[in-house]
Image 1 (cartoon, rainbow, N blue to C red):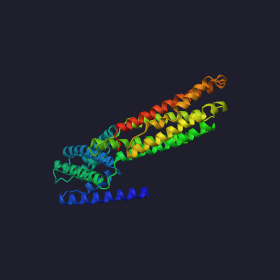
Image 2: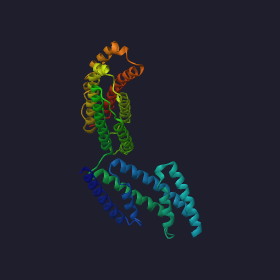
Image 3: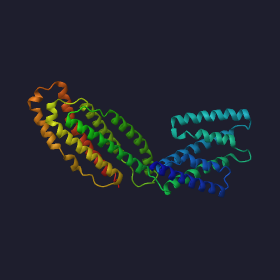
Image 4: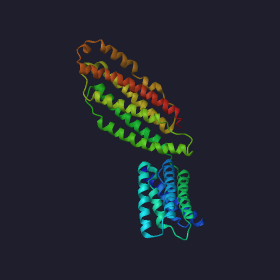
Length: 347
């Protein structure tokens, strides 16, 4: 249902933007106004930031390609062989530039259009200016349509995705809490892989949110420290998952299992609180993380001086201290995440 609604809104934006672009191109008597409409179809994305980024890239590539094609037309004799050789050179040069600067990937297309559609009756400079004007018109209308017609902010999308990632973290943490408390084997590998893919995909969208801020389309950006904190937490969870894949001996489970489970459950609730703050703002109660901290440390310290600890092998000792260290580090990373969310003024 949500996907259908988003698709319908996007279709409405594109239809209105194309209508406006076509009407303006007719009023301005642009010779090839259809390129303005094509530009709208190319740059219109599902969010304001993505559309603005696509429009900016399209404009940069258009200017570069139009100038390159215009120069080629100006210096090339109007003969088929000469035009063909010039076209090959221009396409090769623009392809090389696009490989080095990805935002120029459409420069070759524009240059080829200028070379192949230019009329001898129209001065080259006028022809080039018209192409740039048409592309600019389409880009501007596309951005304005995304901005004012039921807008979807890239910043909102990214914050919602990060919030969803925190919900997944909470689920994984609860699975680990149950396993540690009961002394059961558990594998969270697939969940951690899915979380990794989700974070990578959301980080790719972060560029659009940053463009929104750079183009003054939104007042607030998103701190790059937020995804860095999420990655640190994800890495800590992966390490805890590896530790508890093999159950601890019964004596260790009885000594620290319930306390470790309580600590992980508290971190799961804190992850959900951070997710809610990212989506809708509000305060994050750092006291949530305090649940079970003292009890776990007391149980861990008592275990170290017990007979059970003296009889543990090197491997079990390493796993036990690894669990203690990682749980404390993950707690600190959650607190750092909360600070980064507060600094970003999410509301």
